[in-house]
Image (cartoon, rainbow, N blue to C red; front, side, top):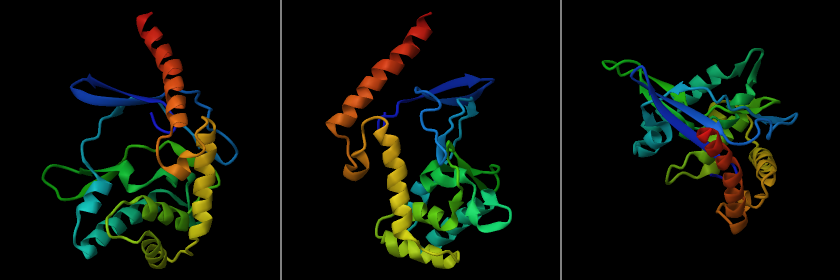
Length: 220
């Protein structure tokens, strides 16, 4: 339960492999407008074994090595989500792409080469996403001690030749998140950053409604 959203994750073993399925116990069109949508697939996926990218980055003490690994990941994301014909715009799916949503997976046991695998690619910001905005989210959500987020963001923008627009992207972030939370009566969550009694009450009500439905299905 988080911010009024109720989710369930199910694990199973099939053909000797562990699989995972993430289910949002809400109407699938509950976050859907001309700017933004949430599109959970509900499909079974292989369970990914690997180290969390943010944990890995935050554990690196050497600043040069830290930036080297971070920039390698950013370069791959810019290539993966690029939009042909516009070198400053990314596919809107990149809206939820932050290091905490990735695991590092070795390509094979005997190699030092690895892939970054996303485990939470469900949000889509329909107008697309500026690289400057992407870097804002990276800077804001990478919880590495000792980093001044504003300075870090401006440094990344300079490296990738993007125009830093801190106030603009922060305003959009709050507007989008608050519009999601307001649907469940949790508008104040973004400002307080803690679970209020109203948030908790909403979570419990949704859990009672949707988890009971799932329980009844299982008993049929």
